[in-house]
Image (cartoon, rainbow, N blue to C red):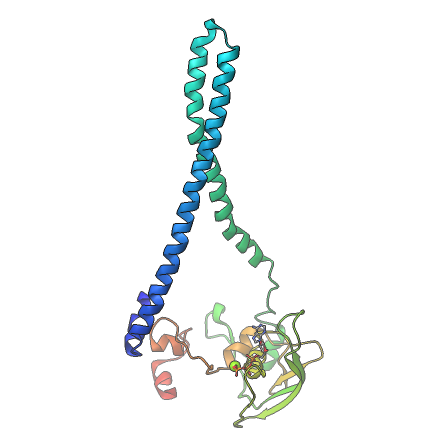
Length: 260
Ligand SMILES: Nc1ncnc2c1ncn2[C@@H]1O[C@H](COP(=O)(O)OP(=O)(O)OP(=O)(O)O)[C@@H](O)[C@H]1O
Ligand SMILES: [Mg+2]
């Protein structure tokens, strides 16, 4: 919240945010108290349990140990009194490991995600020449000016088990066209943008061309670098306006001013 203080002031939503903040703080306190109460309760039960062990050992000793072993018996009882502490420590450690390992579990889950398509493909080079002036890691295909975007029989679904969202759509958008897409909420307008950037890969059989080049064979970097979008909910990355406009610092200041 502290990092967005400026935005909160600018939009004059201090009161609203204060209420939200109080609610979040309440929630956090509630969970913390529950956690502490449960930990204490747990400690009490563990103490009961270890006292029980101590008591059993105590009576067994009284009945079975002879007078010569009285010294050993005393030492054993004293040592047994510390079992309670060790037992609590041991169980707390187990719980801590369990809760901390959840992060590792999530990290392992991420490693199992299916990777996206290739970022660069041989096909990219068939479209435009590589710009060798830019250092290797930024090797960039210079695209010809886009003349059209064509989607043919294009279907898209977000995951295998979900329904198909875009069903066999056919679009042709020529260079310079202004197109409006109208539909109720959830109709799939944003999904078209999603499809243009290949954030989600289309269903088999879909066709997608940019300037007569098969956009499904292009590397993802090539597609995403050459298309830009002004999204429904705008956001800025942290940094200067210049860094937001040209995150990879490819363009000169003059070019940026000209585009503005
Ligand atoms: N990441 C996603 N994973 C699964 N389903 C999604 C995802 N994004 C959107 N959907 C589903 O796809 C359908 C179309 O959503 P989409 O966001 O494209 O609609 P929209 O026309 O842009 O709506 P809005 O006008 O509200 O922006 C909805 O049923 C939505 O639930
Ligand atoms: Mg939308």
